[in-house]
Every structure is written in C-alpha cells, then in structure tokens.
Figure 1 (cartoon, each protein chain N blue to C red):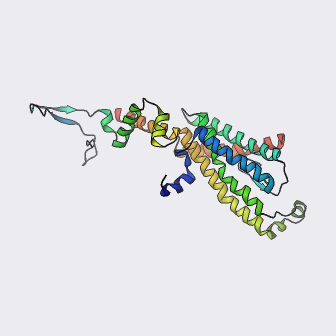
Figure 2 (figure 1 turned 180 degrees about the horizontal axis):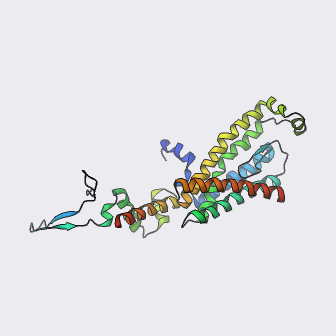
Figure 3 (figure 1 turned 90 degrees about the vertical axis):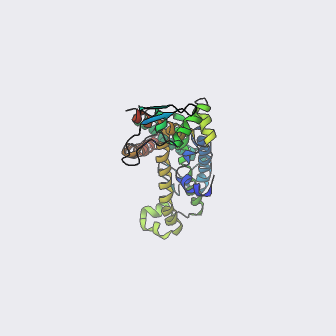
Length: 87
Length: 190
C-alpha cells in the first residue's frame, strides 16, 4: 500500500522522485499524488470492482452480498472523500 | 452469513436486504400478523400501537395494518424527500415494511393472554393487574416495540443515507406524525 500521509505530522505526502528501472534515470520534483491513490485500499478496491461491473450498483450489491442502498451509500462516502481530497 | 453477524443483522438487516426483496419478506410477516392477530385478538391500531382483547374480523385486522403501513411509508418517504438528496421509494417501502416484522411476536403472544373483560376494566381498572398474562404481554410489548422502532430508524438511515442529529430529529418527528395520522385515519375509516 502506497503511503499517502506523513507518519510524523499526518500531512499529505507528495511524490519527490520517480525512477526508471530500465535505464536508472531519476526524475525529481514535487508531484501531487493521484486522487485515487489518496483513498484507502478498500475504497480503491471498491472503485475497481465498480468499474469492472460497468458501474452497475445492482451487480455490485449482488457481488458484495449487500443491499442496493448500502452499496450506493458506500459510493456516496467515497465521493465525499474524493471531494475532500480535491479541496 | 457468520453467526457473529446475527446480532447486528437483528437490529439492522438493511445492509443485506432492501427494496422489493425486503418488501416481499415484510409483507409475509404482515400477512401473518393480520391472520394471527385476528384470532389472538391483537389489533395493531396505530403506526406504533397494539392493543389486546379486541374482537375483530380479518378485514378489520388487515385494514388497520394497511393504514399503519401506508402512514409509515408515506411519512418516511416525505421525510426522505426533505432530508436526503437521492433515494429510491422502493427502499423506503421495503425496509419500513420489514421493520414491522418483530410485531409478529406480539400477535403470537396474544394467544397466550387472557385479557380482562372491558366492562370490568371500565368499572375497576385495577382488574388489569390481576391478569398475569396480560401484564407479561404488556411488558413484552416494550422491547418488541423498541426493536421495531430501531429497525425503522436503520431503515431510514440506510435508505436515505443520512446520519447524525439530522437523522435522529427527522426520524422522531416522522414517527410521531405517522402515529398521529394513522390514529386519525383509523378513527375516520375503520
């Protein structure tokens, strides 16, 4: 799991360096993490399943053995988190 | 379903079941409540109310249950429209119908209750305290009614995705309004 928050002060982390495994080139800077990477692994897994199920909450509910409104509420919660992260 | 999930599902089954599926299961319970209640002389004469000892026909019993259900579902639906951005009517319908299921316990308990004669009660209300079974069912009605109210609370919470004080306040108002309207409709129509 990619760390997204500072273990010391809990501020959001930024990407400082990226490295090419092929030629060993390193790109340094201060890059924002992608919005989806800021979510928990459970939320990321949920979004992945949501896309795989063609965005069908009914199919998600059936797959997760949860009711339709529960799955819709989980999606609403993730939307709130994304909104918060984008701000 | 794991056994450790069962207590949680007893107070909030709506994480697993909602919509038409919950409506179908809830209707079976209501059907049984109507039939059993007729013969055990238990009438559900209000959104939250029940009374023991009233002689009634099947039609009368089902009319009361229908009024209760229509009142609760319609008031909760209106509440949802006020407090929530987007929800499905079928979820309110299903979850609220299923939330009445625990009341079947009272319909069954009515079979084992010897309720005092109404005329005797009117002459001397203390007669009620001489019927142990009546007192026991009255005491039993408290946790069962609370269970049903807790289910209704979770039904509104899951169906409308609302939390906190907003949910608690809206729920209390909605339950009280449902009870008052159902009482008025029962007086006027049944």
